[in-house]
Length: 349
Picture 1 (spheres, rainbow, N blue to C red):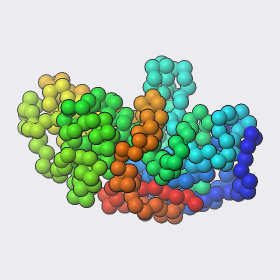
Picture 2: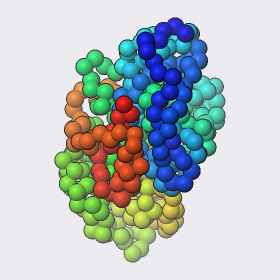
Picture 3: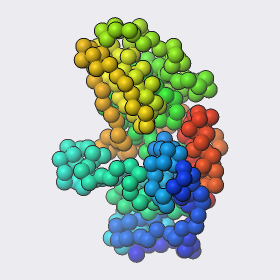
Picture 4: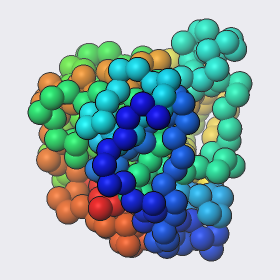
């Protein structure tokens, strides 16, 4: 091994999926470091909506460790690793993919033919004291950046990918449905990109208020949205782009109904219940419906660059209190029930 910090423990605490829609803290051996790997002590790890799916909705594999929105400090590097040293602060970036398939060559590594389905792999994520990562997937945190802020890199990249797939441009009217963590990051990213007309639809009054605090120019409850009776009837107001960030079927259905002709619905939030859409509304208005899975090529790099500008309202985007590993279950449930709006950061130490 090329380098290792002194005094590393033999084991670490980790929040492990139990297979009964719960997580529990267990002691696990430190991950072994291969020639091209880096081992990092986790500083902060955000709770993602996918973590809710993995635990509370049973998608996750028993015995696996969640958490992929993390920042940490390098404590060991593999013998073939160059460019990383013990003590460096880093965040986890995108999986580079195989680099050979049509999707990787086209700059869409998130669609790599070698990817695994969510929840099917033996994930060993960052809801733990330490996390192992491939050296090529890491990004260096700019000097002076709080690691708590740096941990927003991955979810901000997800939000920015939704904007890319929606073709969002300044001057357009945009609706964001769902003001959970990804919805809030989406609003902040829209404003940073110069989009000045951003409305949020969200059932929680507290989340609506937070959405306005991070940049939404308007906020409505879902029942205030107009659902036209006929396929060619255009609501007033109508939107150029709808970014659906809640993962709820009714929000997907309502989002499609808010578009003006040739508008775009981007599905950013994943959900269990399937929507029921009127295909004639899509056909007669030539609407575009697409998904946004993970990130643009180099999306994490651009997200980290945006965070480094200090232009985002990070204090409002992150819940004020971090949680220890033992409170991950409670935080998952509170996020699921809408009691928390911002990004929840887990501090494993």
